[in-house]
Image (cartoon, rainbow, N blue to C red):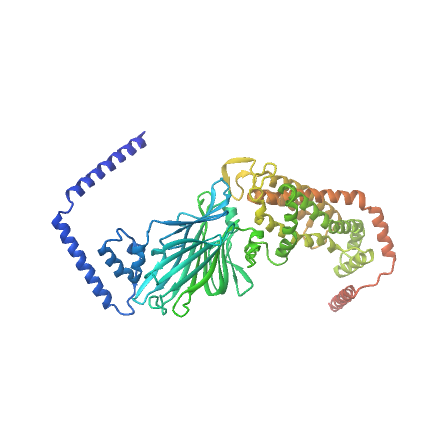
Length: 635
C-alpha cells in the first residue's frame, strides 16, 4: 500500500514540475528584438568559423560527429552554411537527401531496409524462417549493425559515412532490383553504394565506388571500412546457440580459420576473401572479389548468464583498410544474409560451407562425405526422426564386424584367464619371466589383449563426427518427432520451477532414455571385460574403475545432453539399443565358447613362429632378466 502511495505521489510531483517548467519557458521566451540580436550573432559566428577553418594547417583535422550532420531545415541558408563549415563539400548531399527515408529491397526470401543516413542495411528479415517463439527472423534490426567508411578529406576533415546522407535511386535490371545510394558532392561527383538483389536469392551484389572525388578524398590518410554486428538471439537456449555462434573467415585462397568460440578474441589476417558472422543456423557474410590485403577481426562474447542475457550472443567487428585506385574507391563485394545451410552455401561455389563447424580433420571429412549426403538422401523420403533412426541402424550395422572382433577377443581372454592366473602365481617373484610367459601364451593361443580397444578407436571418429553433425544440421531445425518439437534443440517433458547449474530449468526425455541405454550397454561390456581381464600386480584395479564408469557415464549423458539437440540424444539412444541387440545376438547365437576354447588348444599345439617384433621383445626381456641375475649375484 505504501509503494502505491509513493508511486502516485511521484507522478503528481513530476506533473507539477513539468507544469512549472512550461510556465517558466512561456514567460521567458525571447522578444522579437532579442530574436533579431540572436540571428545577427549567429551570422557573426558562422563568419568567424569560416575564418578559423581557413587558418587551419594540414595537420589540424576536423573530426565530426552525427550531431553535426542532423538536418532541422535544409532550406535554411544559415544551416547550410553551418553544414559547409563542418562537413565541407558533402553538405550538398545533406541538403539534397531526406534523412527520414528508407528504401526497401525485397524478394521471395529476403526483406531489406537501407537507410538514407549512412546508406547501409539497417534491417534484414528472412521471410521463410521464424524464431523458436514464432517471431520472424531478423538478422539486423534496431541498430544492431553498422557499416561505415571512415576517410579524410583534402580540406582537413575526418568523416564517417554512417553519419552522412545518401540519395537513393531504385531501378530494375532484367528482373533484379538495383539500388544506388549516392553520397554527393555535386550531381557528377559522389561516393556510391550499389546494391543488386536477384529473385529468390540470399546473396546481394554490393559495390563501393567513387566518382570525381580524387580532389575531395585525402589519399594520404587511412580509409577504413568498419562492419559491426551484434548477434541477435534466435533459439530456445541462448547458451546452446552461443556455443555455435562464431566468426569464421577464409584467407590466402583456401585457408579457413575462426576466432575463439566462447571468450573474446581478435586477430589480424592478410588476403581475406570472406568473413562470416555466424549465428548458429543463420549467417551474415561479407565477401570480396579481390582479397582484402589486411583485415582486423574481433569477437566479443555478450552471453554470460543464460537467465539474464537473453538478447544478444556475440558482438562481431571487422576493420578493413581500403586503397584508392587513381584517387578513387573501387571495391566489388557481396553480402549474404541467410541460413547456415550446407546445400544453400555450396551453391555459390566460394567455399562458404566451410564456415559450418563440421569438425576438424577426419571428423569433418566423415561428415561432409558420408553423413551429410546419407542424411540428405534419407530425409528426402522419410520423416526426419525416422531418417535419424534408419541412419543409426545403418551405422551400427557397418560397425558390427568391429564389435564382433571385440567380443571374440574378450571371449578368448576370458578362456585364458585361469592359465594367466597360474603363470602369475608361478612367477610372482619374477615380473620379467611372468610377462614373457604371458606373451608367449597370447601368441600361441592367437589372442590379443589390445584388440578389445579396437572398437573404441574405430568408433571414436564416428562418435565425434555425429556429435558435430546433429547440432549443425540445418535440416533438423524446427522439425518435430514424437514429443520433441525441434530436433535441433532440446525436448521438454517437464518445466522446473528453478534452475539447476549445468542441467537447466527443464527435463528432457531423450537424454534420460539415452542414459538408461548407455547404463545397460556398459553393464554388459564392462562385465565381460572384468571377467576376461586378470588383475596385474602393481597395476590399478581396473574392475573398480569400470564399476565407477558404469554409473558415471550415464550421469554425464543425463546432465550434459539435457540442453543439447534432441536429434543427437535420439541417435545415442537408438545406437545403444541396437548395439545391445547386436551384442546379445553375437553372444548367444554366433560365438560358442567351447569352440573357441577348442580352437585355442589347437593353436597352442601348433608350432608358432615368432614375429620380428615379438622376437625382439623376447630377446630384450631375456637380456634384462640376465642383467638382473648378474646384479643379484654381485650382491
